Image 1 (cartoon, rainbow, N blue to C red):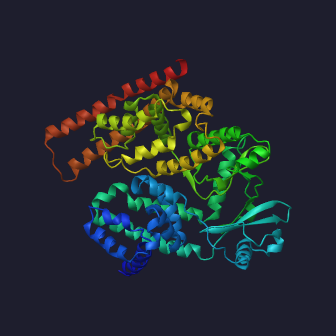
Image 2: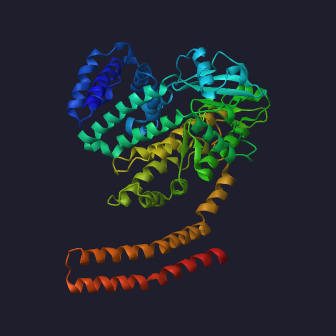
Image 3: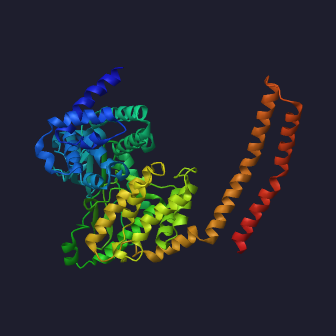
Length: 515
């Protein structure tokens, strides 16, 4: 009860601020929730008319900024949900600035000494008092260690964990109410979305997790000549402090300076595109906040990322789905695109595969015949997500995060060279990966793997069936003798039926070795 009362008070305060900016206007036109629409129209009567000139997404961004750090972060997360709020509003929210007034340097130094357990002079020979960046969760200072290493030191804001915990509880409570009272919204999984957001924020607020992400990315690209990840200084890193190698370089979107330094923008674009492809498809672990302020180019022309608080992961099944789906669009095989959606379970089996194929064609046909540099993979994915409601497709948060990251990557690509499609540059590597992972031999390996897994599970399945039959006959539930005999006969058949599985496995392995 107290939770509901506390959150209701905070909801009213937040709704009032949102209404002052006119950010509740989209709620006034929801036919499935007439009471909510009426309430939204009522509070909009008190809005500040100065914001009427802004687009809805811009008004929402301004309101979220006024509400504080948690709401800013949530707005940035919401920017990935173009299927929920529309492409224009998603674009406006993607520009939401995560910049706040810095907290006092005295507090920063106190946090450092408490976390590292030593006076600051014993850890750093110099420490810049003016932060280079101040965001909703932490701020960054440049420093030099007592070993002479130039570093960037990220320090959490004081009491930020308590503030986020309070706001996350409000978000979760609202999502629960939405699912309980408006069943039509359950398809969008609001509770799951908030849980994923909370998980992401929790990881961001433990700077050891960010440091680990940077370390993993650095390990994945240890031998890459065009992409370098700064090294973590683990001896000066804790849950609330992260120390990482300082990056010297030029912002990736500063085209004029890059050219002055004798660097070739198209080659930089090729390196960035190659690194992005490797992150997504080779490793399934990608930097999901690669806006121009988080990507630099060093003197050797290598792309150097910073800020590893938001990372994305794709399991092998999702990577294969994505590869097959994009291949289908590129080749105009829309039936294949539809089939991989059904096979992955993203579209319910009761929906029409023919109708979904037609919908995919409506997305893909406008792309065929267009100049390569005008084709946007991010836009293709966004259009695909917009047909989700018609076909009851369940939201795939990991793909939404990828799509948002692609939007940013393609924006950087157009800045470096608007006449080149960034996905065309690493084509040889992409073709090799597709042949290795989605070619005939790869599919034989996949079939063999499935056969092995099935063979390993069959004895357990038979044993379970026998136990169920035994419990039915011994636990008081009486079965007709003919039924018991039939169960026994079927169990014996299952045991004898192992040989086709082993035969299929042997054929698959032989084809893999000698085919």
